[in-house]
Length: 152
Image (cartoon, rainbow, N blue to C red; front, side, top):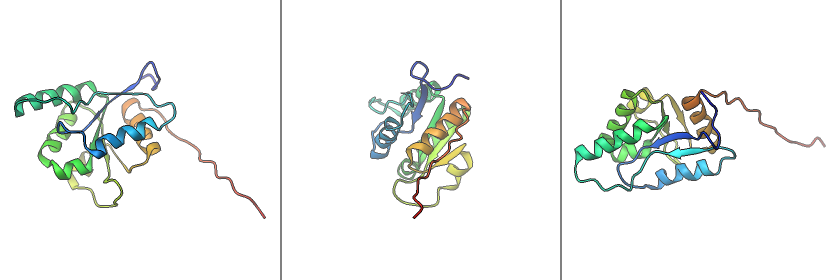
């Protein structure tokens, strides 16, 4: 599969229940801050649909367009049934799932999130982008950190 580039961005679905939460928006802030990382957002929480069947059909369509699905653990605690549905839809469509831990708090993830996650990441731009590269395009993300120090 081709690597992520400006002409070939990775297609992402970030979980939502037709509302833009702080964590939903924060994911895109992290992705925007990453150097040379190109993505296409397949999720659209702004649509106003009339009933549950229409909501499910639209979510299925959005998830189907994505290469990787990002599930927010905070959304799971607020909207368990809907996020469970999105998670199972993603798995049914053979989409890899990245679960993001709770922002700013280190707490145990619900068992079903851990069980169905292909990767679990904290709120770190680099870890998130690397997880997306691995799950969506199977790109090797081995990086070397440079640590500078002085000897006195």
